[in-house]
Amino acid sequence: MSDDRMGRLVCTECQRAYPWEPMSRCPHCQAPLDVSIDVKPGHEAVFSDPQRWLNQRMWAFRDFLPVRDAEPVTLGEGVTPLLPLPKLRESLGREGDVWLKDESRQPTGSFKDRPISVAITKAVEFGREVVAILSSGNAGGSAAVYAARAGLKCVIIVPANTPAGKLGVARAAGARIVLVRGDLADCYRLLRYGIDHYQWYDVTTTFANPYSAEADKTVAYELALQLDFQVPDWILVPVGSGPLLTGVYKGFRELQALGLVKGLPRMVAVQAEGCAPIVRAFQAGRERVEAWDAPGTIATGIRDPLWGYTKDGDYTLRVVRESGGVCVSVPDAQIAQDTLHITRLEGMYMEPTAAVCVSALRRLAEQGIIRDEHSVVLLGTGHGLKDYPPLPEEDLGVTLDPTQDAFEQWIQQVMG
Ligand SMILES: *Cc1c(COP(=O)(O)O)cnc(C)c1O
Ligand SMILES: [Zn+2]
Image: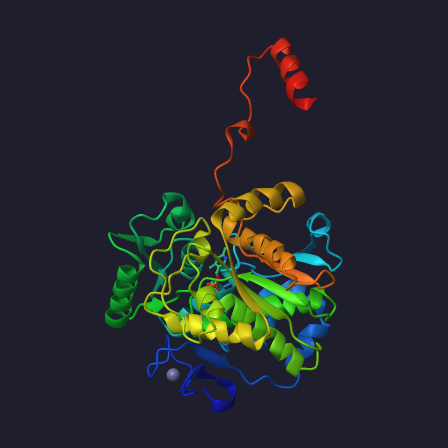
């Protein structure tokens, strides 16, 4: 392949550059690698051709993605709705718009289908036959489904105490699932072993796969198209290690460089109080993130203690600060309440990991950090169908004898 068709991988810390090869983090300093792509004149044409976007969906932006010759492995990811949340806006007494970018409308119900579509396409491009992933939830399910589509084998490595419900998608798609009697750090070691010894391709959606992280830029491209190239003041993102947050910000920076938008959004990294390594470093004014000891939260999609790869967190923290944004954590009780509240208030049926954005908006608005007139986008990262808090008994419905009397009594009692 000629040089001008290749981008490079550039270390986010030491700036060393590498060719596009199946690499994970920087071999020199273990920091995340960032894909650099030469954007050529003409590539921005897609932004004046919304029909192409609607037809080809995420892959309409392939000139901005680190794939050149390979045929995309796609299930139609992208083109997710941008929904106003007027009742939430009113209930918080806000003037500025509050929007939800609804990423639950993806083939497997989370935004992970964007990065996984690119990761599996790269696996095919690199000629690999087995992909492997460390994930207990959305990313694992997504990898299993896209691997099936591409005809690849998929190995999923998770701790043995992973709730069974979360593995449903992966099991349906025939992934090889390894339940390890140990914690995430043990799983990570075993994953590395398979990758180092058996040519498995790592599609883990931390920064372990630099190519897949680029796909998260397409959320920014879509927001620009949907908001008529107006930039929201704030974007709130649930953060595990942070490729979604850094990807969205990078997408806006590219749009700015192309002259398509003026200004950049401020990014908010939202974590749960039970696992908030990035927030802790932010609040202490530190540059280095330390791993979290005993992670525990109902926001399972962001329950990442960063064991073994704290530099992922360092990078995310730098991007948040560069954007003029903040990191904030919210308690599980509030998350559970807001998960339910936002479903009943706005019909937004999201997993707790996505609802953290609502709790964070509430808190940052109270603190006056997000001002009333500011416009806000919440990233609704995952669907409520796969993961939802337990509901109170009285919400589970009633069982009646099939008589009109019993029914009439119930109507009088309940329907008022
Ligand atoms: C993975 C995940 C996140 C966290 O995204 P990162 O980019 O890995 O930090 C947020 N929400 C949901 C629903 C997820 O599955
Ligand atoms: Zn480096």
